[in-house]
Image (cartoon, rainbow, N blue to C red; front, side, top):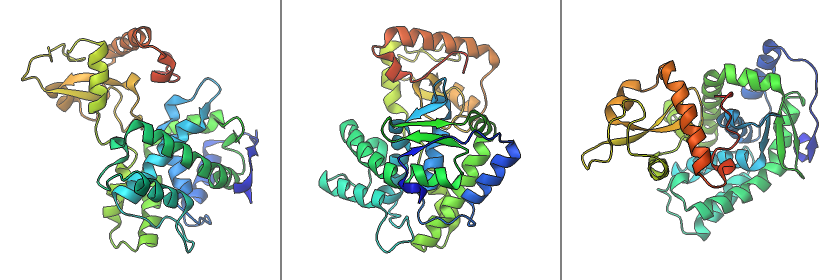
Length: 309
């Protein structure tokens, strides 16, 4: 009954890449005894936060709960895929989300990112309690304590360094595998006949529907110019866009240290490619300037480090 654990200590046994693959293959595949899609959502949230760990490879419960809540809100409310477990009733996270939606009269058309910030935080706090009861311990047990440690009282989650490096190396492949197996389970639970339809939903549930809010933040602190070509974006006919400096396919996260203002031409030509190396120093300088300008910068650029970039 590992899901009832309140503390999980890290098994320090050495792991090779082959060992990690062997464990993950069982966890992700039908060979694992899963009663819900919780484990998939937690893995997706871990992947989304791989670049946000501190120097001790730790993440907070709030960081993981935010991604986890976003996954379920968009599946359950936005896409009406309510069945997420094998039991007779709804999974606890689903029940809490549906009750929250009804209580606050939030339209079903709203993706998670359109919800008021204050309500987002309230819901994340609620789902964090569900994760303490049903999620952190469950995946910990399935990975035999070899992937991470956790502590409900301190609300911290610490990845084994070797596992963190493994997940960074195979990030895109792990994302695709998790999406595929999660979609298969949701397909079975909700009796949806077309897995390609579900894959499209699962692949996009963690990603922000729009980066427009970040445009306002960046314009507040910097001049309206394209990060890549320097074009003036302040003119009324300028097409201002927000670009992931390191593409989404490389870093599964919308963090402001990785977002820049861009003209439409540069954004379209760059697309899903890494920028030229000459821009690396520019983004580091930009982030140093942002740290100096923003109050409570630790919250805005959580765990940002030049060397990590």
